[in-house]
Image 1 (cartoon, rainbow, N blue to C red):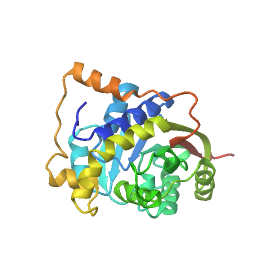
Image 2: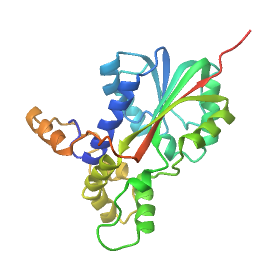
Image 3: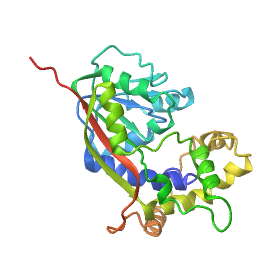
Image 4: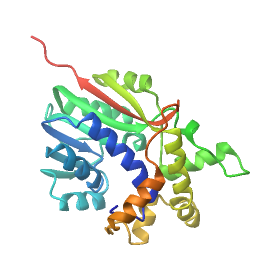
Length: 266
């Protein structure tokens, strides 16, 4: 556990990383769209092997950290709807829990399709249509609608589309959806919710509900902090969190989707 000051994020990402590793990261030259500090993809590469990657993020403080990891051939600081690459440059584009934050999603998908080679793959994860349904909500009293609005504001979530909605928008951009599956079961979502409520949620309220968690981490000078818990303590915490979903659960909070650009036919 490299960042114990982010327990809710660690929990979410532990489940998410496992899904990406099980599904498999494409081979070839790839674009990590919304790479952040590069920590997550570094973990994925440790399991699937190295790739030739370009990192991209809109936040210069994050791209500086990503560049320092030396896992990217290049790191650029630009918005995802204005990619500084010529057509057909990448074998794949990967985006992990990023697209739900971007206002101009149609522009992003068009740009992704443009920079992919014919037959190129677009693999991404996003919160799904049942995200709200999976949350427990206010502890005792209070409006559930207000609670959900505040959760969305804290997480800066702009959309919760189902697979068919993504398929429609991908098709408009020139991409064909070829796979989708759900992850983060209701019990896992509620475990994340409970941890977040008692950690980042408290800080979010203390800062007047006006700053995103990443901004608070920077103000507290813990964003770049890396520390390791003893293995036995990490194992104990992981066991307490119980990362396994219950097979009978019907609803899940997130989606993993793959789309492909049509190959050139003669």
